[in-house]
Length: 357
Image 1: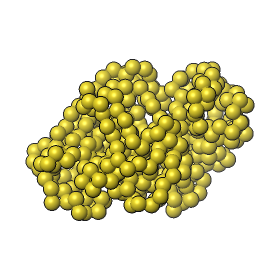
Image 2 (image 1 turned 120 degrees about the vertical axis):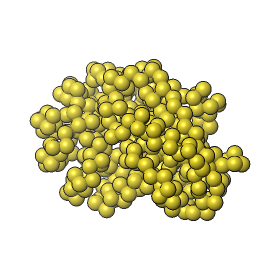
Image 3 (image 1 turned 180 degrees about the vertical axis):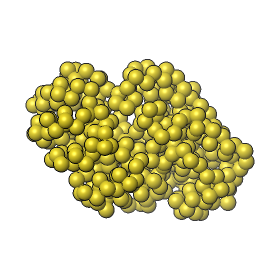
């Protein structure tokens, strides 16, 4: 049994460029970094970065919960199985916020990976051989007229999957997508509506969307319009709706959901993400991982989650402006536009200086 001591740091700053979708209009981003350290210096790090206007919790609530860990030692058994270790710690240190739970789980599993000299994905899921997972590029430009040119540039740079935030002017956006599809007939295209597409607009454009042979349409409509939307022959994915267990179970039970989007900072960590993936698979749906414009610690953790689950669909873990608030860093699992297995212990994350330098 080991005694781990907690330190909590807060990093926040002005975003160097705008975000998109649920984060559109957000000018600042805040991240809470949790470090758990054993007496011999072995440490693990985690991150709580709830997204304002999207996450159910706030950065202030997460920081308050994490600071309670600094009152005394956290007892952790490195011989426990990963999920048993998490259960043991939370039985003594319960938390309510999904993002703070994710931060604690990440720090504990990162520490466990360093103790065992294993990458986090192997700590979670053993030594089975894993394949690389592609990463989708996200278009952050809100003006649909700019999308074809941006996609051309990304494809020239090596992009293999594209994600577009839709809903502001849906008819114009569909026209832009038709232009993109004409130029790139085999490029996987994924849409994310963040529940901003009116159902009538979605219905009017359903035939055009079907012709585009989209990979996924994430959360196009409001929650009360989902059941009408499922009457359309489109490849829907659940994201925000996963926070409503009753509604998401009912929608998955129809067999008309193509995939679920796992965001551990929103769902409440690794265990909750595994449970959501298992539920999706039991209903014939696939699953993928994505971020909420998180920092590099959460990004590394989510990449390890993808490898542990061995997801097939492209991950939403591309670059975004919030990452520039942190010191330069490397994530072992991120190799260009893929998530690849590696042998670096824990998160496989290395900062050139401290995270908040």
